[in-house]
Image 1 (tube, rainbow, N blue to C red):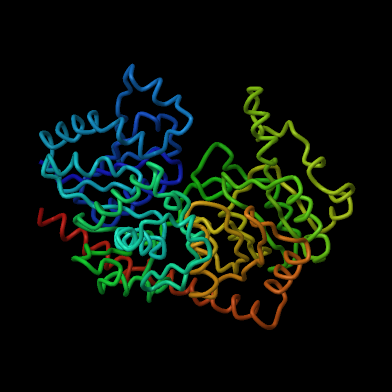
Image 2: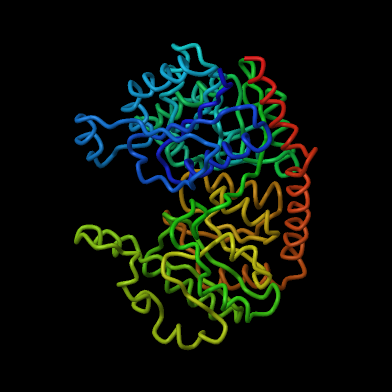
Length: 475
């Protein structure tokens, strides 16, 4: 029977695409393994490319799924729990027909861990973010045992996580802030299961997060027990991606913004893009526009309508990203006309990897999502960090304080408001400054070289992948 590895991502778009890239990498480097990707019943429209080398199976839905899926507070954890019985049947069928060596899951598909354990299948976690966030996850059970308070109630108190700079409690990942919410319990269970797993595959490389990976491997993150093997096999940059680092779609033809970039001087354009969920208030959008105008820089800016506008569109049944809403009403009067010679504003989407790889782009204002970070590093583009949600504030701490790959923004209030003057100052420093801006530009260039070396034949990422493959061969 063929030696087989099964991958089971959560139904989040970015996780599915990243897991598919991992599957392709395994097949390319270790073709002895057959790869099967099992998708949740909630992932029927998953944006993964056709591949004759990978088998894709969809878990069936049931009549009981409909009301559960309709609940407004359903999380990826809930969806994975709903699919657990069907996953067990699928894994049992695969194990009966093939030599099933391992199951690879991500944190949000954690409900698969006890299922695989009951079937005697070695389980590995694929951590789609970087080692900085992994250090937080692995240390959460320890932090949980040291206090009875929620992180949200600790406010500006410092949370010390081995290998990381000090982090404010309020900057911890959103799902971990309130220990009274079931989402927190899901995270805690996932963290504990990761620690008990056969190993953790991380979407990073040793040179990019050297000190953090060393701290994890040395056992600092899990002081009360053994740390599972850590395999840094990335960073895996998606071969087909959409404009926000979340996966490819039908818009892969050459975009108009690339033709515009062709006409701009080398490294002269600052690119602003904030992921598929990144939205700002109307007031903040106007402030951003004013900051870009004051900077005098060339810019390419991806704008999504404010949350209120998106909610209204959703309620009316229309798509707020379909181009039907004019951007002008969210921007200062006359802004588009005054900046049309040096700026381009796009509605909702841009081919991010292609933009970052273009020779005219010299800086990136980012929400600090991990996919966006590794795409920028891979392209050698320095960053300004503007975190919005999830683990992005933790990523910012790494980017700014640990790695010096990004400049920070001074943010105020609960919504993290950034003034026009602050944005203008930091993007100007990033693009032309001789102080911190120069340091960041040089550090990103060095990080890019390290990533290229790690991914090359004989590089650290290939060595890590070979090490985990050897474990699979032994069974």
